[in-house]
Length: 326
Image 1 (spheres, rainbow, N blue to C red):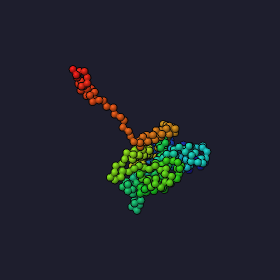
Image 2: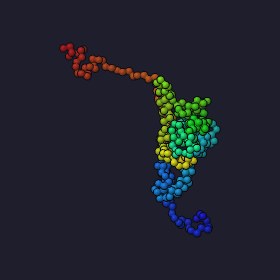
Image 3: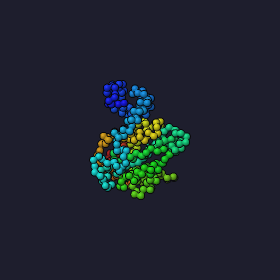
Image 4: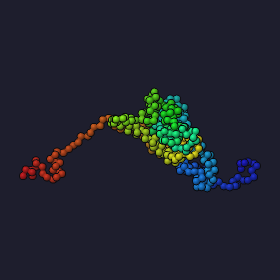
């Protein structure tokens, strides 16, 4: 029975006080669980609550955390527009108002989980990690390093290419957008009819060393994809996505989205350059790439004559000097 009802016998504010009285304290409790991956018993001992109360507190606040930090992360790419803008009819208008979609990088990350029941172990076993894992695909903008899209979490047995086709990410992006992928998405890059997916790089064939142009191309692709590695390192600061996941597997994707929203929220004031400055920076990178792919010329070496160099080092007079003749 609520205190505001007429049949309530107690006055409003009467009774036992909450130990976490403010919203800041309750939010700190949830963020501490994400940051250090503490159990409910240990977290309850730190804040002075029972483990069951801590569990209920997390379940009430977790659905609201993503909406408060980054509400656009839960929307599709086509519906993500700045508030208060008119309806967009062409892809050119979308790229003009949302330049983050022009150049994106996609990669998948895995996290180990507790061993599932025997009848479902083969579904979660990852042949790459040699253990039971959970896989999530994230798409990052190269312009500002923000996460634009997160897929649903799938068992580790699912291949990266299969997850990419399941999400249909290439169909949601504009036709002129550039999508950088790694070696795990070779099938998606080959099947793209528009050829807008950048290849991941050249692998070293057997009994042959990569040429200078191939090595320069690999360095260029690594520089383009390094932004997604930086974003994954920011996400992995939260131990709830690093250690063996011991919570309910049905809540994994929600917690991953909450951590991603918090990462985008922290990154928002840290953007030090504007869109125009980023475009100028991209022009400089393209010029550097052309310089790497072009044949290198060695600068001319200016050497001193042999007699002058010997006289400068040893201090003895040369044969052509007057002292040497005398």
